[in-house]
Length: 504
Figure 1 (cartoon, rainbow, N blue to C red):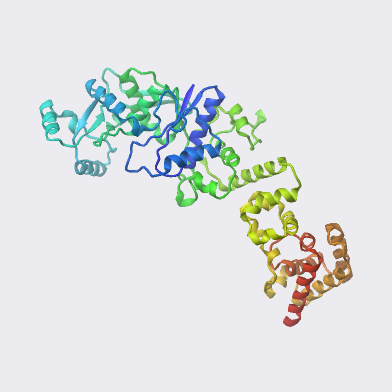
Figure 2 (spheres, rainbow, N blue to C red):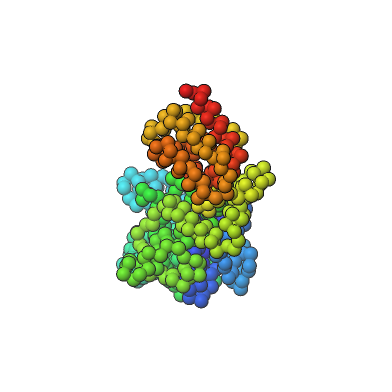
């Protein structure tokens, strides 16, 4: 078995492209085959500088190693189409000789007018074969005059010797049929001498002995054109499989208008490659297929090795798959936690190692204090270490303004009088308490204060936490007291007591 992934270097790799690469990789590895990486850069106008290097780097980041490709070589190279143009010209000329292709001299203006007329008459857009009927003399005159031309594929006439349709058994969609009259006479060779995808990919797949062509659903209507080319040349036709579209949550086609679609975007945001691959693998496929009874449907976290073992195209769905960013976040969190737990060492040291590159340099001066702070936001730091500064900021502020409406919370039944009374009582109790290294001891001490005041837990804990952090959302009171230590905790509590006195 030989599979391939042939992207165009027109920018960053799309998440749909990564899924195509992944499925081809899994299929080859599962069956002991070869996975080939090829660059299809025949559309030179759309080629972007540095895109090839980015594609290579992205596949490496994702862990999708290939057996042959532009940077690793192989016996069927070169693996960049722009370096193979003479090959395509040779095969295009053969098609003309066999009557399976013909020159088209139509100008862009004529083609545009043709499309407008077809649209007005509600006809499917399709070349009208104007140049198919040119005589040899007319063609020679146009060639002599150096009139620009393209080569078009000649689709057989309906009802002829070839029958009236193209049929194949798709690996995902079962039996697929296209009638000849619905297939356009596709451009195979452009006026600049470069082939289109339709010619180049067929020639390359044949010469590189590709056995399985697994690609996106958008190529489904092109497949009959490709099969006809294989038949004309007398080549063995590979097996085809067409993957379902990726969709936005509203079930429209996935586009950057509704979120990030480039793998690079997620890489830049700190998503783990294992998580991205895990998530993308499940977009349209699951080893449990359609049955919970098989006992597989509940598993959501897979290593690449597990995906290789379990992958099969018969479990790929036909319907579009929704790209749910919340699900990706969850998978990423599970992978971060998994890797965190597997890593040796103390939790605080591991958290520091995970987050340090995202933290201000000055925060690293007191690492013991920083490690305590990180412990208090543990799960959030593991879930997204890039957001650690946002969750830790209050620990490193020497002063902050607390809005009266924040510390006085009607939902908690806390007014300014209760806030002042609660914070003052906690501060007074902790003034003579030295065991700030034990969160449980801090909790017992504070709960005693609540009992003496005969207030509800929230009426004391809310204003105390706000006094310590200045935030509506933060770790709990006892965690913050433990992290800050006695001196800083007392300083903050006393500052808020003074503020409350001014407001009352």
